[in-house]
Length: 511
Ligand SMILES: [Zn+2]
Image 1 (cartoon, rainbow, N blue to C red):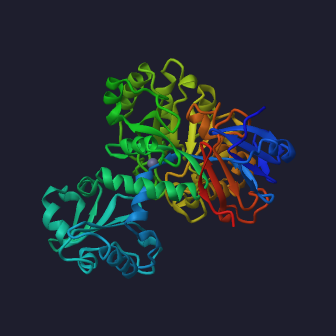
Image 2 (cartoon, protein in one colour; image 1 turned 180 degrees about the vertical axis):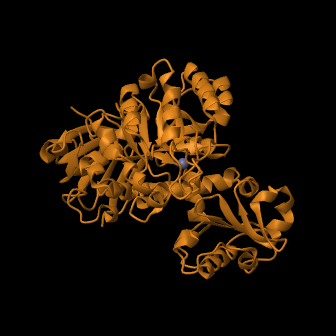
Image 3 (cartoon, rainbow, N blue to C red; image 1 turned 120 degrees about the vertical axis):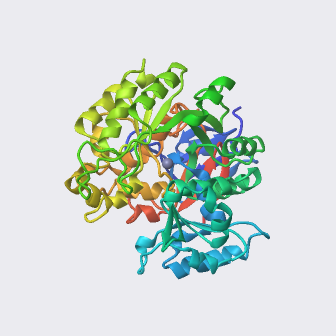
């Protein structure tokens, strides 16, 4: 006699995503595993007295989404502190910060995240005058969306002004305006780096937000924070609601190596991922490394954040020690440089080395991705910059048509993993963008885009045998959607009805 299932999802449209049309009516889950998928009648045979049977009322069931590039603590920060991304003016931002000020304990910093003055009628940075209105006794900081610019009040300038890189502290007739940029902002990051307790609060908030959007696993980029220990503590307590594969910044490489923590080590929920590094900057800051100058700055071709030599050295060393690598590369020159470094390793395909962003890839680069078996980890939500008159247009002119070439990558046979970089986090938003590419011949089908957000991420994390599909033996990470993404008018507006991670219901909004 077969043991009863813990959970049965029935009367559903279960898409395995293996072949475009393969569907089942039901799926049964036991001990965190999918034990049967097929006709409702056959699957319901596994329902015992203790089994929870969910009538899905023809809703769509899919493998859970894997966001292959996240910064969960940042998501938590916007949720716990003031979320300035919703501010529609400087005054609005100040009121949101005032609201937060009334909620913090005595002496605690008042922080806001994500303001974007470019969307305001009066487009200007937040200054000390704005922020002194929030408080003249406790530190107040408003971080801009790009995290490279912040507004601070007089308390912060008094306490930290001397430590800040003077070049990054803007002044007006000799007085600091309260606007600080680039390296000067680092002082603020250090001063506000969350301790263990706050980090736990941030991760809890972020996982709630992520699972409500159907995310069952993330590849989180971690540098010098308490996040890794918090992920492991929550997992040990049975309170981690999604899978976290930690991609550690290269600063941590020596420590990982020394302590014997290698790529893919870890239990089911928390695993060691790749060693993460940078090469270039971003298009916004004209620091992405280009082979031809910027359209709006004919003398500039971007900057190395990590030099090609330094990159090659790290890649050789980490690959030698059997680590997966991943490198941020946005401009065509940076992408080629990473591929050069990977090409010189013993077996880049088996190591599944990856490149983050891949925004401007040449024909040659795409071919090399395929040949070398390198994973392209891309963020379809970045397509909001790809319209005529948008950021890519300003920086790249006609080359904007060569950005984010998902169709070309897929057709060349490149392993494509989708993620959000938390700008913002939301797989269905990304899938909406990828299926409606501003350059239509680069659009993906709904099935292809869903795969990049499920099995694509699973492959990038060496998890394709347990994640990214719905079949007996696979880990029970699934999502139930209220509307079919194949039929919805607006995929980004499709709501999640249920999220299951490791067989456990971690989010539910069935009605
Ligand atoms: Zn990132």
